[in-house]
Length: 116
Length: 111
Image 1 (tube, one colour):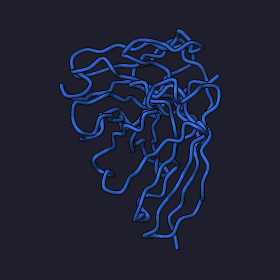
Image 2 (image 1 turned 120 degrees about the vertical axis):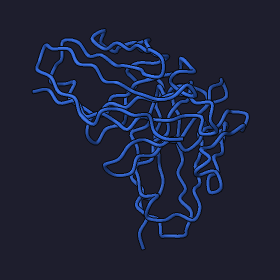
Image 3 (image 1 turned 180 degrees about the horizontal axis):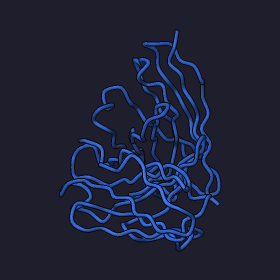
Image 4 (image 1 turned 90 degrees about the vertical axis):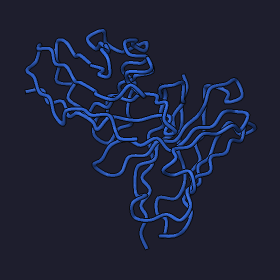
């Protein structure tokens, strides 16, 4: 059973960098597939942020590309998200998920609030 | 890349069938068979219900079915049950640089 778990600070100050990690269990990231991040502002819809392959190959949503970095650590079986220069508009529940041209396994999500 | 268009809400009585539409363009829904549907209960993560237009993951009830015609995909829930009350989102791979686009979301209410 593939399981994903997000972790990271729940509060980030404006202009700072949001950092989250997704730990994967039940499946080795090195075995394949892409792994992605998706966010959902409170009361709103879903937005794909970007995805990464175990080799490190990435692709990002162009609307966020200038501020996003996704990385992978196969030795720890986890991948990470960094979003720089955050504003209140980045307040959202952030999910990690396995990307197989759809998102079949999801983490429970973590709320990140951007506020001073 | 605009979000795919879904009705804001759909309702039905227990036992009835309902259909949720998801309208895109030839660059996304109409151009690829990578259309998927997600169910989201309040405070929970989305759950994959349909992938590649009409395929059900293991464990998903056969009351859920998907289809596509042109630039519009549809999710049908038959034999509506109270537990089906949730938000539903469609998603599609897209040829635009966005790669993935989600729908606006539909709230399903069981009367």
